[in-house]
Image 1 (tube, rainbow, N blue to C red):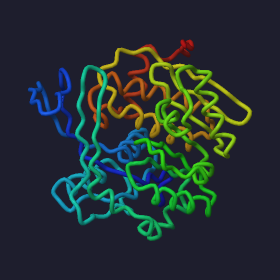
Image 2: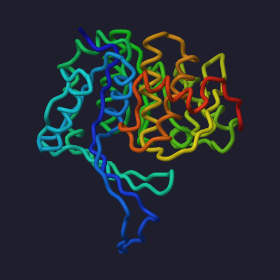
Image 3: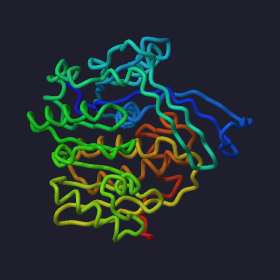
Length: 315
């Protein structure tokens, strides 16, 4: 049985440190806490969708070291199809994260993720052909993403591209082939070189990419919610107000949850609302994958956090 959602992308071991402040250049500071966890944008998105009950597979490269072995086992225990996961020659990717309050800064060291090259995807064309949605990010090479988009187009499979980390060398021709393009407002401004201070400015920047051919722009706006823009539609779906504990992985949770609900029901607006709820829940918990609830927990936490009514937009 083939995965319905196929995530092509990265896996990282998160090395998270709680800090009071970032050190100056050449300075050493003490930190109160450190922990290691499974992360990486691709793996996070796959894990979120799997937690909600989707049939999910990954095409990814784990390291040849102990961390790579550990991550492969984690995929299998999480119910993620690993037909497309192989060991590279390099060590596993890592992501040192520095957490200050409810904000974070992240450094990405690709490791074996850099070995997920375009030619690797040709080995897994059958997985791509039978998927209902392909999910991409930018912790792997742009060329690999372009190959994935071309193969998805060949088999008429919709693609959701989350352009993080931001990269200003993106080929707009390939972006225009995506059914869903999901940046946050900072990434949107980085790509379009347009101001993104107000909702009106964000809409204009989103329309620039829609005019180039992107069918659905999904711009995540943190506490303001998510903006959905198409050729004929603009809709701001407000966020739920919660007490944020840890924002790491919330964007990936949103992408994974949207993928699950969209493949399940095909309704974009409803899927965005559910993804908003899922992402809001995760910021009330610690860690990235460790904060992702399964479906039974979602129902319980929706009630507990007062998320059963529609929030009012606040700009």
